[in-house]
Image 1: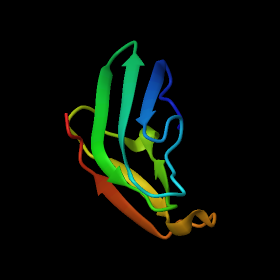
Image 2: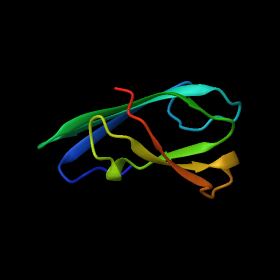
Image 3: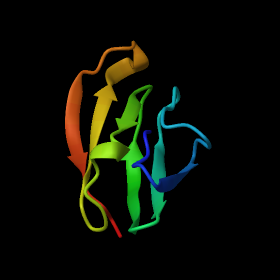
Length: 91
């Protein structure tokens, strides 16, 4: 993830930890926090499913609190993006 100039970001992945891909499937929750000089925000999405897929969250383009985040999905984790989708901000 790329941060805006003058901002920091923090992310938290649960099940599996420190990753946004799972080879065994299941679901996980995502939380990204933007901490900046001029603004701050939190993006949370709960219950994202993965069956060996890789999710690439476009933090830089995220519009902020309450807004969805664009995600590129690499089906099967083969290195190529297969679909793009907006995931709702659950907070």
